[in-house]
Length: 177
View 1 (tube, rainbow, N blue to C red):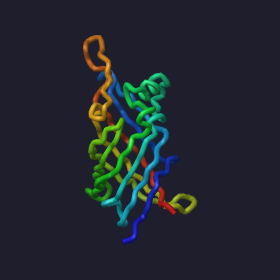
View 2: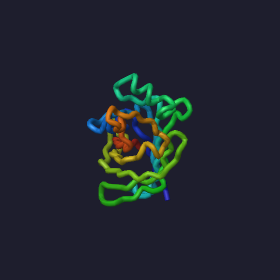
View 3: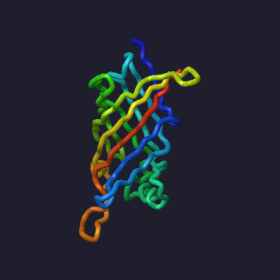
View 4: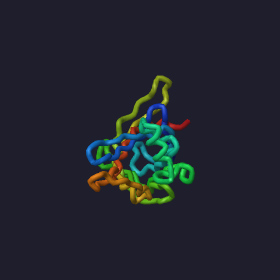
């Protein structure tokens, strides 16, 4: 059976995360540099192999001081662990445009299984005739499970930073030549 390889088109993709700050607001961050792809054995993505990695040093929350803190050993420790990586163990079709994406996420040297939702956005050819397709991948992880345990307390003794991190990735894939 023939397989098809797909690569992430970084010009038309984005990877974001959201975390509660002081329990009253949400801070959004982006990873500017990433790469990945998929290999399919069918006309759809059911059973596809998916892999992805993020460059930790590319974290951007629109605040340089916060970004530098996130890169420090108190959080991602970008010098020691320069990549966050994901490799699928299953990619299962739920209905016409929804999939469950399960795999191993490695962050700060810790690998844990995670399950994400992948919503298929469709397929089209670009103006050069290249076949593209899109997915929106969403999910939630607990940062403490990956060694991101730093937190400060507020004046009232509450946590300054939420434990749950929402993940949102809008990914466009290009059919590899």
